[in-house]
Image (cartoon, rainbow over all chains, first blue to last red; front, side, top):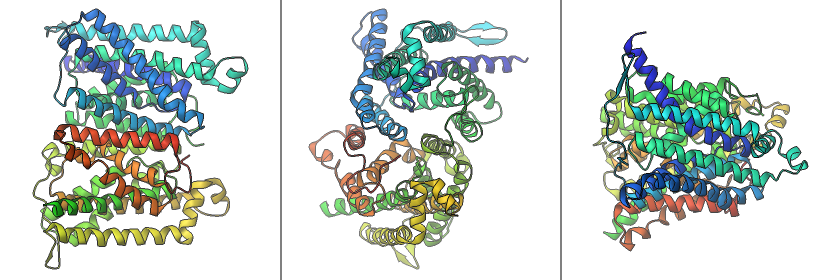
Length: 294
Length: 290
């Protein structure tokens, strides 16, 4: 393999790891709630700005700022669920209404970021720009290695959580069949809230890593969630490991795509891939055929 | 001065009215959860702008803007015809992003992020609409025409078939109607009018760039249609006027302009959320979104 191809593969893996962080939280929320929570991207963006505010503006210790930012993400997700989605669920509204509400929330939070922090690009600047390590002819920075490792650890942790713990099992039960889960005594409302709390905490972790790797922009949430949900759909929406698979696939395809196309089309590649999957395999690679055409 | 300001607002109301009415046809009457409407608006704006910049007369450009948008509407309809609910919403949303990415990156045609400046003000058969008042008259004429055409469509037997497709596609099929063709026509027609609105927008502002056509711009239109109520033309008109005028006082309170933009979006988003929670049928809605 030539070194360019290897570099593209590495870049694809880094992008994939970031998308996986976005997609896994998003997919966890989808699997229990069964609607597209677009505002997940804005939760990530907002938490990244909170980290910026705590660490770079107030000068609070980095470790403590990180913990606060993750806690903030969790609370924000939980708050959104209580204030908006629960009210809609009470009226038994369809998933399309919830989707439209989540787009509204996304715009709401992004505009709030614009007002609070301004439109200019922010950097957290905790890690000094370091020289990349050469690895088989490709260049990768220590932070990027850290992102890939954290992302993999988090996904393994999430997988174990879903398989082994009582809460994880209850989540899968609600995800499979909400009515039967309620019959055996699982409160679906509680599970919905928990999935928002945990999913948004993952968003908080994603926010920190993305905030360290990239600059902060008010619209970053939209960009992230588009990639995250494209990854989730490609991999199989509602299955967390499917979302992770889709994320890495998307990252790699995107990066190899710009070998042939101008780099500006990177985003379009994701949408075209998403479109193709929506049309021909809406259940995704790992998903079970459910209701795309129902 | 104050007159000029009101004329400006009235023109915006007219353009948004065309856009909202055309979305109403797809979303309200046919039940197609189309989140790609802004893309048709963009296609119309770019088509018309590029044509007139290359010397094509306005009257031809605005028609072609509608036709090109309609063609894209047809093209989008073919693959997405079977999709329902949130899958259709996502596919059409993805379409918005693809169109955005193309307008941003096809720099040899669209000049990318630099946008297209100097789009000529319309003139029809030597009659110039360069002053805002004359442009307002033109907008009103077109908006009225669009209103009556859409009204004619939805009250016709074909309109009843559209509503039948929305309420129960299977039953409509059983009655021998080709719902594929019905949705195909509905989306194409809806896109046609969105293209017309896009053309008017381009010639009014005289400058367009990709950032005029993002998901941010979708929220006001979606708000108008949902607040006015699905399948209600009267509601759409009232909601358009309310929603375009509502954020205007912000300008006079004395916020800096960097705050006014996001504040508008916050107001729209909040209204959208509140209406979804408390009155999902909207003001004059006949049906609920499913």
